[in-house]
Length: 270
Image 1 (cartoon, rainbow, N blue to C red):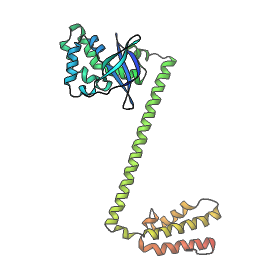
Image 2 (image 1 turned 180 degrees about the vertical axis):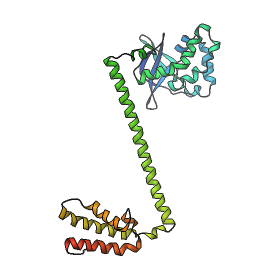
Image 3 (image 1 turned 90 degrees about the vertical axis):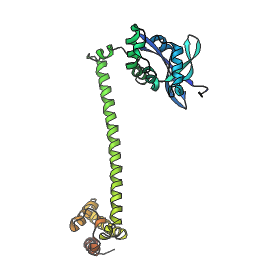
Image 4 (image 1 turned 135 degrees about the horizontal axis):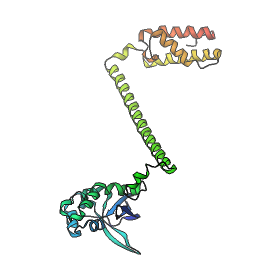
């Protein structure tokens, strides 16, 4: 197995797990921080044969690639290299332990590790919680100011998370709708349906004429008249966009807009 020569130790914690204390570390690997767990101390806590477990790790095609020797502060003032697994792979190793084959007095402990150890170690680094003490849940049943603040903070986090997810879905749906609209336009063009409507150049002339009318109308009303002018055009020809004006109505629409502008300004610029 080719192993990295050096992993930079960033942080080391003693995590309380019921009556046990588990060592966990943060290292820098490939320019990213990762949580690793030394395995020998856990083997000792569970009464497992370290040599047998080492052989099992080396036989496993996945775990053997992920194990890494890391120099940790094992004793005051001294470092010791320990075989470690990334936290994400810890349960892969734990679930390979047969609880029925350990000492009877350690069976429940092995099962507890398999069920909860990963969660507690993850929380220790992500949420700042360093214990699996179930009394924390009991404390949340009280009505102290700290508990209220904690619950309020959780509610705010949940609300923010839901908002982020909602915005992400809306953005995704908007992109999908835009793509569908463009696809329909392309299909219409391919089927020859685009010939039913004004050309792009004619649509531009219609748009410029509407804008000229809106500006002239705005001089008299002192308001923004663009929406009203477009609305009047749409109502007259029963359309929802000037680009959807039937081709055979182009001349009529231009005359309508010309007459309208002439009634406001006294001239016909288009």
